[in-house]
Image 1 (cartoon, rainbow, N blue to C red):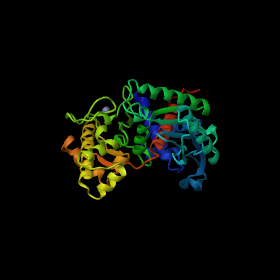
Image 2: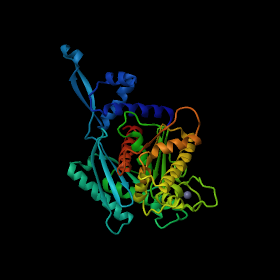
Image 3: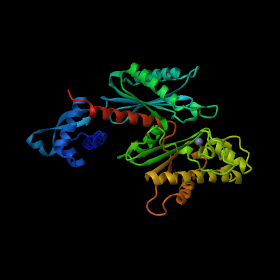
Image 4: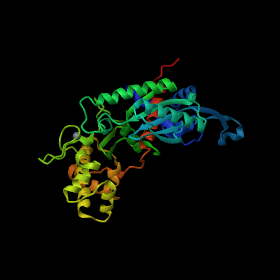
Length: 398
Ligand SMILES: [Zn+2]
């Protein structure tokens, strides 16, 4: 998109954002509120009315009521455009349906039936959407875009038994293509597929905020360690779709560095994933069978458990400090089971970050994730809305 296209897109986003509060406004009111020229506002609204997203109605303007001159006011039509976000995680698929005002109409999930193959998962998701649409009276005609989150190309989901095979990203692409085909075929709407951690980051940067955060780092510490980066208002994908893979920054260069499933040694993931933290606790003489028992030991101030927690916070802090030098985020969001081991985990990470980033100037806020199991699906729904708006804006006229 050229610079004029980008400015037009920003203006259009601003109009949609303003109308999302449900209040009707005249063109002049929108122009004053958004500091956008009246002629530009009229142009944007014409296209939104044409596409059916905005409803023009008339009201008597209070100031002019005595003179009886009606003014045209505009509101978003909540029933005009439904978008769907889906998140395929390890055991289940979560679906979120939103309307044009970004209101969540329905959220549901279903676990996979056996056999747990990708075609079976896709069918489970299609049945889930049909059930939700039926229950909430949503006609497929109002569907605009579906966005589907999958485990990323480097995810442990593609190699549950261990090391990632050469060309594992081909699995991600192949499944993504099949899902795109099946959903587009079944629902007759464009389908967008991406890494579900990127969608979760979008939920954290955008959902329920008057303005989205333009710069954010999202790090999930779970069975694997996955990251996503939002920079300049966009999700970073990179040239090979691997941007944000912070779990594979090598932080341990010692001879004792643990082997990573990517084939190298000493990656962040080997230290701060569930198995990584349990192994560190064992190195300190702790004997914990799972994350829950480690969490209990941390709450009881068990020395080995606290040492493992602090070591994880230090390693995460070092990598996030480096990442902050690259993109200068406003916020850093920590998600996943390991980030909830102790209530002060974010503060510990923030303390350790200071040695790895510039010693002056404003620092990013490090915080726990707001959304948990639904982050990927909510973010996917947001991405679907964005894709819908972009498509409308770039659609040739006539
Ligand atoms: Zn690795």
